[in-house]
Image 1 (tube, helix red, strand yellow):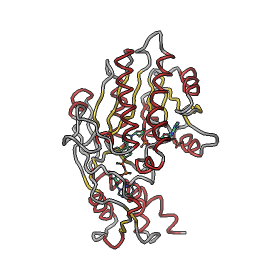
Image 2: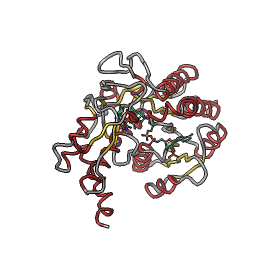
Image 3: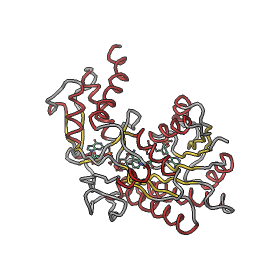
Image 4: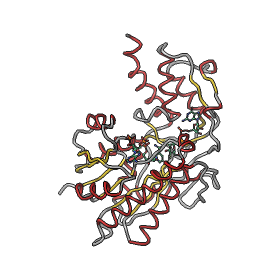
Length: 329
Ligand code: NAP
Ligand code: G4F
């Protein structure tokens, strides 16, 4: 019998990579898509036509219950969230509801659905290195004290502890992946890596003059999204639910990302192409993230496959290919 998986947030970067990974492993995959006439629905239908689309919203508990009844999943991957940190200050209440309370809605729906056998449905929660915020330890690991610096980070802490609480209270097979930043050509253009790769591609093709950014000194532990969804799957194949940090163990500044991206198109001196604007600075910044993923490497046998330079190169190349027809027109 093929295993069955339900993915919330299937239209996002990770949902798209995870859906392909599970399909390739022979799973029957169900994806939750929100809203009426959501334009992303067509995108996931093209990307992975094998996925059965279900409509629902993390804010609507009955839609989650219905999705469980239809999908009858062995595994649920809760990837849905308002995930853009910058946006979360302007929309703190909504972020708390979706990114925080939405996790509780999903956990509760699973608890009621599988009350006869609490371990029947395995649950993955998309926790985040943003929870470390003002970091209390370098590198950050599973035991590092959480000190979130944004409404998004606070909401993720709530979801993280709810996941642990449901595991401890009800014996659910619930795992929380504390994932550090992971990127790809499918990354949303609001995030700094994709904003840069798109702009560098367009600048190299003569389609754009400058890129306007905020803090260039922030440091992130950037990995490849394709590697990180593999870690999610590995967590749910363990005998028990648990928490795992997933990271590369290398950190780079936004400035270093700019170095690598511009170098890819043959530009060594990029100062004249980059403008800084306080509008892109955050009320509270997470200055440095670098993760220690020894536990995941030892227990899950997980390891990242793509270097920082390869990742930046792949993103810039993909955006050059995307923008080339516009330059030729
Ligand atoms: P993403 O591209 O922003 O995708 C977010 C997904 O959530 C989208 O499919 C979105 O649907 C969906 N969504 C938003 N609000 C919803 C609601 N009320 N009900 C149902 N679905 C809703 O994010 P991602 O980069 O793939 O990340 C996946 C998860 O991992 C997120 O929870 C994120 O916070 C977390 N995470 C990401 C990273 C990272 O570096 N990428 C690191 C740590 C943790 P629409 O397409 O309709 O908007
Ligand atoms: O790309 P970012 O917006 O990602 P951020 O805030 O680290 O959040 C991402 O990673 C988290 C994991 O740690 C996820 F949980 C979350 O869902 C999301 O996927 O910003 C990265 C850094 C920040 O320090 C920001 O201040 O880049 C800096 N930055 C500088 N200029 C900018 C810009 N960020 C954005 N988005 N846009 C700018 O113009």
